[in-house]
Amino acid sequence: MIASTSGQDEAIIPTKRTLSPKWLVALLLVTGAFYLAAPVFSQWSSAIQNVDAEDLIFASVIKGELIRDVAVNGKVVAANAPQLYSTEKGKVTLLAKPGETVSQHQVVAKLDSPELYALIDQQRSLLAQLKIDTKRGELSDKELKLDLERQLNATLSEFNVAKREQERAERSYEKQVMSQVDWLKSKDRLDDAKRNFIHAEKRVALAQERLVFESKNREFEVEKQQLVLNELLRRQEQLSIKAPVAGVVGNWLVAQRNSVAANTPVMSIVDLSEYEAELSVPEFYADDLGLGLTVSMKIGNSNVSGEVVAISPEIEASQVKVRAKILDSSAVNLRQNQRLNARIEFEKKSDVLMVKKGAFIGSMGGKFAYRVIEQEGKQIPITVGSTSVEYVELIAGVAEGDRLIISDYEGFQQAKHIRIK
Image 1: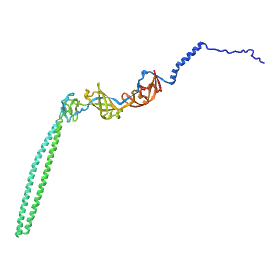
Image 2: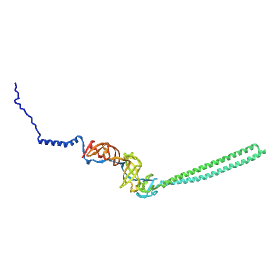
Image 3: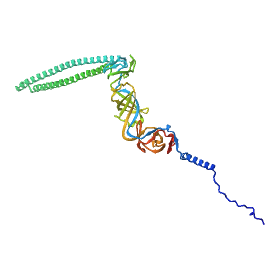
Image 4: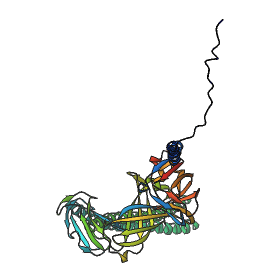
């Protein structure tokens, strides 16, 4: 039998232990460090980004009048700057130099056209020949009238002779001196003479009608030829090219004493009494354009106003050409092709919430913005309305006085909150 070990066991009485001051201080230091680092761990765990305030652009939401417009560039052009063309083939002599002031209807160039001169001489000769033919026709008509008058008189004489013979035959037949056969023959001769006389009268009337027709036809031929000659003379007169308006000579479009074809541009005349602005508007705003829109222009250091008077029906290089009338051109010293900046006003809205335009419009599809509260930016939904050159309308999501971040949101990674350092 194995003996028990109870004789070797010794009872141990537990004693109560206390922390030393050194361990107590260490515990307090660890607790304080954890408390101070808690916000950092909380920010890391919540994925809140830190953004430097110097990299951001801020703007406040204001209430006021929003003018929906577009800024464009353009140039000053004369409202009336016609080009002069050669009317005939020939050699041109330019009489007015570029920059020279000319008056209306002043001769500024001349054409020398030998072909036109030769054609005028030919048509004049033909007109003279037609006039001679007309005179000859008149003489022929007079001769014909005399022949007809002679024939009519001859038939009248025959008719009178036959009438007298018939009267004698009637008396002789009554006295039984002439036979019935001779009496009937004399009566037939009277009838024949009467018919010949009537026929002669009709021939004379018809001949006279035909002579009138032939005379008018000859007159028409002469008149027609006169019109042809008048047209050639008009063309000859246009060989002297005149200024249609008062102004200055723009540019020579051909060389001096150069041979040109018909309808060749010769020079331009610029009317300095009225100017317009030729503006290039982006294609995006083509549907908003309309006649009568107000245009604010800056020419040099002067501000002038105008209105849209013409819109090009076609688009070139993604631009729409627009003509705007300068309402008070006398207040500014204008020059042809002078550059200018302009703003075309499409619409005016009063009492609307708006904020300065920034890159935030293109971020997040323009549906969200970051509102700044103390040192934190919070993402909020917004609804964008009309835009102008400087401002954008905010229809919903903000209130007057809200401070927004209007710079680009690309680095925010669509975070719900950001912390601004």
